[in-house]
Amino acid sequence: MTLLHWRPRPEELAFDAIRASGPGGQNVNKVSNAVHLRFDIRASSLPEAVKTRLLAWPDQRITADGIVVIKAQDSRSLERNRADAVERLISLVLAAAHVPKARRATKPTYGSQQRRLEGKARRSGIKAGRRGQDY
Figure 1: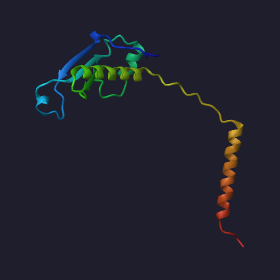
Figure 2 (figure 1 turned 120 degrees about the horizontal axis):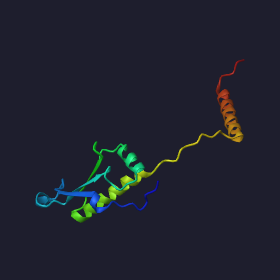
Figure 3 (figure 1 turned 60 degrees about the horizontal axis):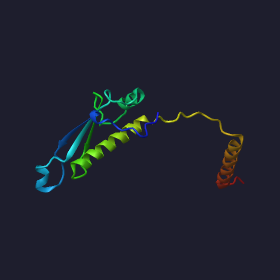
Figure 4 (figure 1 turned 45 degrees about the vertical axis):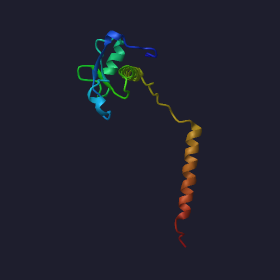
C-alpha cells in the first residue's frame, strides 16, 4: 500500500503549545513555542491496513490507546514547530505503511556451487602446505 501524498486532515490533529526545554534565557520561561501534536490512529482517515500496522509499530511515541504524541521544539517559532511535528507524523505513517517485500528462497546455481568448492579446495591446499613434513 502506498500513501505517498497522504496528509492528515486538520480536524484529525490536536496541537498543544507548551514551553520548550533547554537554553533560551528569560524568554524560555515566558513563551510557549514548543508543540505537542496528538493524532488518534483509530479515528483517523487512514486505511485499515495502515492503522493495524501503525498500532503494532514498536514506537514509544504511540500510546497504548493508539494516540501518536510528537513533541517538536527545535525552532523558536511556533508555526515552524507545528510544521515540523506534522512532517514527522507523516514520515512515521509512511514508514508504517511500507510493507517489506516477501523474500523467496532460491537455490544456488551450479556455477556458484562449483566456484565455492574450488575456493575451499584452494584454501585447503594452502593450509595443508603449512603443516610440517613427515620424513
